[in-house]
Length: 319
Image: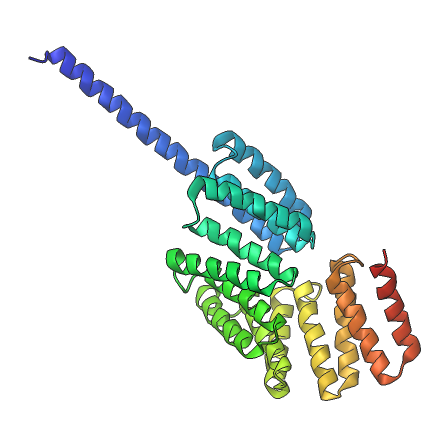
């Protein structure tokens, strides 16, 4: 027969174990909430192109995760993905690819491949393969990302739209503009549902629908869409933002197709001036602007002006 003292001791031990378990669970939730908060802060800085500040936050995240969860945790893998995202945004593609493969190794070991975190890794690897012009691999990884995000987050989740957007970029690079526009239209609906009209992602989808319409030679469709995207980007992001410059650049190319060379020059030069402040002279997006203006002047027979821009692009490329 169990004594009353033993019963009391056993119940007390169970109560202590239960309290410790609840305490550990509460600590775990607190740690992960703090981690999520730091990741969101770093993402906001990436979106605002404040890469130096983003890297400082990422240093804090790495220390925090190493101390609280360890370097083999899923969270450490997510941190590496975020680090790669900064490198990708800065056009340091080699470092970004190394980071994404390192993240893939950590996440697969910690949680396998059947989760949204692996979906994030697959998404970024798909982008890297697109940059490397390996369309087959890009589509493979982006489809993996979309399938996982659709399964675990739902088809109306913003991350699903991100994967659809990247797939659309690949389709455009392959010349499949009809499919690309279809995917951008799906992105537009998801982002409208999540964010409303005056959000950078929603406007990006609108902008991309306009671009693909140019490629499909539907200039009358593209022009009002791009003018709307330009007005929204000016309102939401301001006139010094590189995304605003991207829409100006696209309108410049549209007006070349229309034969409206005065407007074409105006928009292309404005885009180039903004990009000169937003990027380094070696950045491919800035060089794109230089080449666009050189091409316009060459087409118009302004060969001295064209040479000036071609030489600048050549000089930068040779460094």
